[in-house]
Length: 334
Image (cartoon, rainbow, N blue to C red):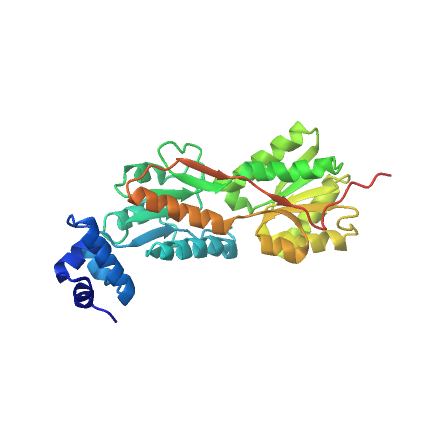
C-alpha cells in the first residue's frame, strides 16, 4: 500500500506538500497540486480516513435517521437505506443509521458531537416535532419527505399526491366509476405520516374531480386484515370495480382475497398500486413505482452540495410514472 512519502517522492515534493495539496488546508500552486494528484492516482494512494477527518475537521459520516415505527414496511425502508448508503460511498462517506424513534433527543445527541457531518431524515410527519431543532442545527440536512411547512428545509420525495391522482385517473379512463383506496395501517395515519396522507389527498381529489364514488380504508399489514377489508369493501360498495393499494404488505393477500370472494382481476375488478416496481412486476399489478434508488441518490447529492457550500432547491418532487400491467382493464358493462 502506497504511503504519503511514496507520493511525495514520485511528485518531487515534501510529504507536507502532499498533505496540503490533497487536503486543501493551505494554498498550493495548480501545477504542484496536479502533479501530486497524478502521483497519488498512479500509486493508488488513499489518505487514511482518520487523517482526512483531522485535516478537514469532518468525519466523512452522514447520519440517516430512519425510525422503524409500528406500521412501517421495513423492506421498503431498507431499499431507501441501501440507496443512501451506496450513494454516500460514491462520495467517500459512511452512514450512521439511527432506527430508534428518538425524536429531537436523538437528533440533538448526534448533532452535538463530531460523529457526523450532516443528516438525512426519513418517515417525515406533516407536523413533524423535529423541525424546530432541525432548523436550528449548524449541520446541513435533507428530509426524504415533505412536512406541511417545509420552508427553510431541503426536502425530496416522490410526489405522492400526484401518485394517488394518477392511479385514480387511470381507473377513470378505463370507465370505472366506483373506486376504493386500501391504505397504510391505521397508526401511520394517526401519526400524520406525510406520504400516506398525501396519497389519500390525491386519491380523494381525483375521485371528486372525476365524479367517482370513493372510499378510503386503512389496513393492518397482514393477510387476515386484507381479507376483512376485501369483505367490507364488497359489502359497503357492491358496485366497486377499481381499487388502489398503498400498502405493500397486503397487496398479494388482498388480490387473493378478492379472487376467493368470486371477483376476477381484471375482469371484475381492476387493481392498481403504489409500491416497489419489483413487487408489482412479480404480481402483474399496474403500479406507480417507488423510486427509492433515485430518491436516495439525489438526497445524498443535495447533501454533498450543501456541505460544499452550494445552493440547492428547497423542494425536489419526483413525478410519478404509472406502468400498466395485467391487473387493470376497461370496466365491463352489463
